[in-house]
Amino acid sequence: MNMVSTPRLTSLSHGGGCGCKIAPGVLASLIERSASTTPFAHLLVGAETADDAAVYALNDEQAVIATTDFFMPIVDDPFDFGRIAAANALSDVYAMGGTPLLALAILGMPINVLSTDVIREILRGGEAICAQAGIPVAGGHSIDSVEPIYGLAAIGVVHPRHLKRNSSACAGDALVVGKPLGVGILSAALKKERLAESGYRTLIDTTTRLNVAGPHLAQLPGVHAMTDVTGFGVLGHLLEMCRGAGLSARVKMSQIPLLDDVVALAEAGYVTGASVRNWWAYGAQVQLDARLDNVARSLLCDPQTSGGLLVACTEDAVPAVIELFHGFGFEHAATIGHMNAATSDSCHVAVDL
Image (tube, rainbow, N blue to C red):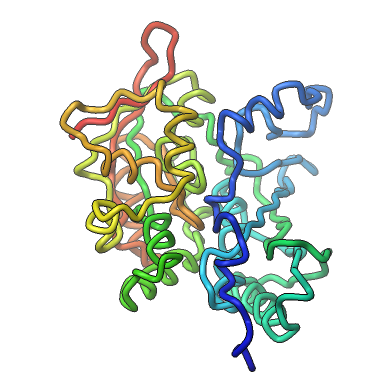
């Protein structure tokens, strides 16, 4: 492939990966007047609780999962960009406890800026991840756009009994996260050409690792709720779980797994604008230990592209959940806190040192 005159992919986009998401507060105002989905009796999951995908019951034993996710480049290598975007899109199916069936490609490219070879590599990266998941890319849609955009519309299936929402956690549940945090910080350093080769390998490894543990976790007794940690950071997606269940949560910063070197990079100022927007959107619902500094806040709000699963389960189920995560290669899986009853009719997250 001749890429001599090709600009860096990340230079063509104002944001990257799940950091492109519209800020939570703005998104809430945009959809607050959306039409209700309650008249559709077979729609098991709609937009009511900001869940990861829509789910529609076909019969007593089958429900179809539908989701879409796409964004601008988080890395410069086109093949890696395609892989990351595809893994991120399929994660929503896994987070519902489902198994992917097929995908459709979503492609927007500045045709006069990027060569067809580069665009083809992006598509090939997405196809490689879908092949790893055992599904076809069965079609899609493309447009000529100012900024490069790629992702998937993904379709999956789940038994209604094993469906896991983000809103079904119970008071007293433990919270287990499957992947370490820090993707946004690594991507910020990469965009400024300050990420070491080892950091890039870490970035690619975590963002292209499929959350295939999802449907197996969903069948474990004691697992009540799941979501994946993406653009709103671990705090944002945990707050969605709290609001959906009418609960609060308490987590310990010292127990949250982090990718190598992200603390030092955050201390050096390599944080995303999305992490700041995230805090503006939901910081009022977060109680931070006074000993936690701005670096900790940046880590908690850091947008995770193709992040890990967040599981709410009974204390008795924690060993089985951790063992299952480890069995699928998620060696950093850890318990980070608990769900609690909401106080004063307010759903919030408290973060201890």
